Image (cartoon, helix red, strand yellow):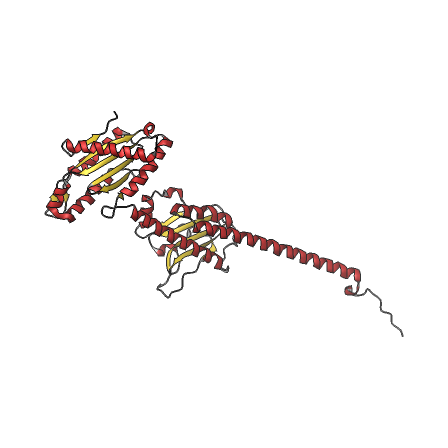
Length: 389
């Protein structure tokens, strides 16, 4: 008996069907290729943005410029909702020096300082030179656990990365990254890229902070801790230009310790140094944060008062004079000295701040110095104002 087999041929034998399958595969491959190209272009764009970011922070010359660049650019190029920076500052040295150099920390609300490395939240164990550096901490955002690194966390924050900043196997701080994407930072994510970025930021931070410290040392009198003449000369030019723009007066005091040679002759140069430090401290206690005190040389100090007319400056000068004269300076339990100062005060009104700033500064110094001379000629321990002709 003969059997006849009926039915369709297998699809692979049907040219039309096979062509359709090939077209679908080709379309899928094209879509896959387009996706890979899009990802490659996106990754290239991200890499270029990060390279530009690296160049920006490497080129930052000051502390405000560096941290400002980090906070301004990193959230954009990394598509993050929150970027903060925590720095270890055990004895407040960084904050003190930066404050004296004019850094306004209120301008950087995402900059955080801690006293101890333990406050960063890493499991450090017993660290020594051979201990591996701590790895970044990645995971879901916890408002309680992450209150310190994200004090003003944006709404909807989901995942975070806490990346240690290392220099010479020493932790100097932490770069804190936050995203509203819950899958952005997970414990299984590779961290090579963010560790590399953190290492560059750490190098830039250490270099800038070191340079700022050296700048501060170069502008500070090593004996008294107040500014030196170099700083005063530079600051005075800046304030003259600012007074012109903002239309306010600035005043200058020349302060001289009376009969300072007798102090050195009586208690020696070490005792004289102690007197200089104590007088500088008493002057500083009467000033505002916006004012500037500098040791001009020897036993002379200069005070620059911002937005202060002649009457206001003379009032502050009288407080300084009274503070120095009012209490004996104790050098030892047995030795206490009575010290006085003479002060000359001059004021620069906005309308007078015309011409070359160097000449204006020189004239203001000369007028305050002339008033100081009158104070010393008039019997010392007094304040004399230079009155406009």
